[in-house]
Each structure stands twice: as C-alpha cells, then as structure tokens.
Image (cartoon, rainbow, N blue to C red):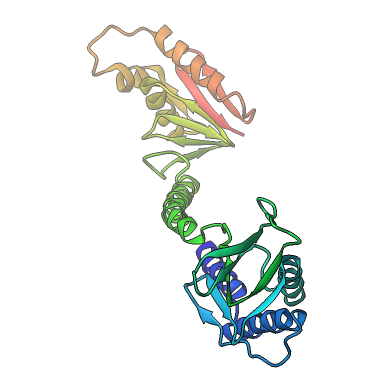
Length: 277
C-alpha cells in the first residue's frame, strides 16, 4: 500500500510540475509583445519562441528596439505571477550580432533576487531574451522507493514470522507437546516436567513428575509407599527410606498450593491419598 501511494504521489507531482508547452509559448510571446509596446513599437512581430534546452526558452524579435531595463524586470515578474508560471528563473538579454550579454537578472525565492543594472537605458538594437527556469530541488521519490521496497519486504518477513510464532505459542502453550493432564486448576505436562496454572508455569524435577504421574493415575486412592519408592527410585540402585517419599510429597504439595481443592492425605502406615475435591 505504501509503495502504491508513493508511485501515485510521484505521478501526481510530475504532472503538477509540468508546464503545457502551448501555454508557455503564449505567456512568453505576451512578454515580448508587451516589451515592444513599451518601446512604442506596435507593428513589428515577436518571432516564434525557441526551446534552447529542457529549461531554457528564447524570445526574439523582427525589428530592433530599445527600452529601460526595469521595464523587462517588472514585465516578466508581473506576467509570471499572473499566470502562476514560475517563481525561480534567470533572464538573460543578449545582443544578436555580438551574441554578448548586455543585461541579466535572477529571481530566486530560495537564494534571493539579483537585479543589477536597474534603470539602465538600452539603446535601439537587435536583442534576444533567454529565460531559464530554475529546476526545483524536489524530494527524490525514486530514491525513496528504492529504500521503501526492501524495507517493506523485511517488514513483511518479520511480521509474518512474528505472527506465526504468536500463533504457535497460542496453540502450544508448552513447547514440545500439547498433551497434558488436568489436575484441578492445573495442567500437568508430563513430557515437559511442567505444571501450568493460568499464565504461571512451575518446573518439576524428574522424580516429582514421576510421583505426580502416579498420583494422577490413582486419584482418591491410596498409593502405597513401597509402590512410590519402587517406581521412582527402583532403577537407581540406591537405598531409599520412607523419609524420601515424605520429602517428595511435601514438595509437590507446595507446588500445587495455588489450588485448594488439591490435597495429599497421609494414610498412616500405608502411604498417601491424592484427592481432588
């Protein structure tokens, strides 16, 4: 969307800055006509306007004439303002025969106007007027496009990656698995050794996970101490006492304390009962 808007802005800006050639020729011929009238010449012609280059145009005349320099300055300024043609330009008056500049001035809204030799009377002679329209220092939209396009692609890639990651996090609250056992308000992720309640995650040790898994498979039933000791420590080949089980159950009780409906009941002489109210 940004790229499309910039392209449209470039096209509109270029179109707005273009001066129709026919309109420009009429305006320049009007300047020549008024200059001849100021020299009291109402019969000779203004010759066809010539385009010297992309920004420079030439006004020439059929017959010789003379005038005062201020007349040309005021005439060009007034005509350009009236027709909203240009604000920045250089006018160069040259002698036809010697091709020498006899008078020149610059109107520039950025650097200031230069109008030397005001009040000078120019004797009768053959003159041509070159008017150069100064090119505006416009913002280069094309360079901006070259910058915007790769930035847009990078932004699209990052945004797409972020959205995928966000969607993955929503679908998989615990990395690596979607399988969990619901224990009251807790979600017990057996493969990841994690308990989760709302936005809180609680890490479990391997032994805590083994013990809680046994209790979860035997809810509201007595789990014998011997069963716990055998299935949790049986493969380690170490001496296990009943106290080890008590410590492990105490840790689980603490980690599940956010849900008051979950309880571990000590059954004297036998083991523990895991209760969900």
